Length: 431
Image 1: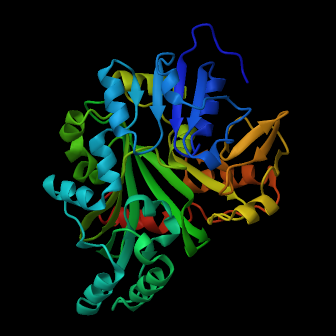
Image 2: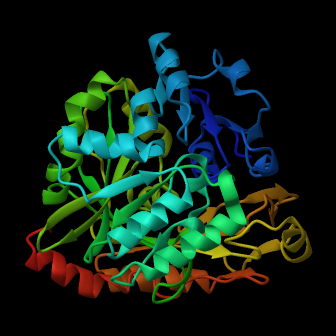
């Protein structure tokens, strides 16, 4: 681990699953002192050898100059810490609820006079199936609460009568029974899926804002199961009609909620308008790492200024940033036996030194070797940047070829949709 500067900031990173190891590693390399706590027991080996690990983050509150929370569910703790005078980047009770309670999120969108797609909440599969039979249409199944963490359960129907959604609900009923929890059935619309994200300093959103295109399916050309994320393309912009129509309207409400952090809203847009789908009121993964590839200032400084409530322009690269996950079995599923057989402690080999674009994910360091750990099989994120999307893609995939991870797989088409999506967005007046 790199020796800290004499004026180094002491940063405590509180992580749910260890997804922000790359951010911890970056801030450490900048000369800060970083301590990392990981809540999920199966993930606690992540980051060992990279940075200092702690078993109880609350015992290090007084030590820290800055505390960063990387996930939802810590909103109440964030608010209490801010009241006590600590500098905190993280959520609030209000923003936690925006993400975790889909119905509340939709109610808030309506309250802020933002158009939303029709959706209905259900607590059992029978009622949902009966609803579709009475109201045939194309729908999306969206789990709520803790179940929404299992991204492969989200299902986007293609049948105009809803027959495919009915079949999936019947399958879920057999396999999950009453353990599934509540879920939404949302009307499906066609268009471009796009996310608008921005950092909030407690009073207002900072500019530029971030425009993101996620690639959620396991295989190229959007085939296979939903994984949550296989890769992302993005760019930064000073002005965005989609931002003005969505996140901007929440500025005063967020200020009242004592929120300082990152907020993202996923939308479907088409010639008929902008239709918000859901909030992510925390860092996105791999969004935050790809954002780091585009931010031209030390991340420790950036988060410190944000937590202080400073108003500043984010210094970013021009053009585009892209990122792709390199994963190993059993991703996107959890299977302990498969993970231990094929992936646990497998070595990540970098053929030539990379000063940029290499982002450790579920890894530990043993005698300077990077070994895969955790339980889900996300080894690395590789990023690329460029003035055009094609340049950024080429930069990223050249870097992918510099890495050897046994039994690994990744999407080969991250960013390919931009050519078609950008034409549509321009024609609709949304870029």
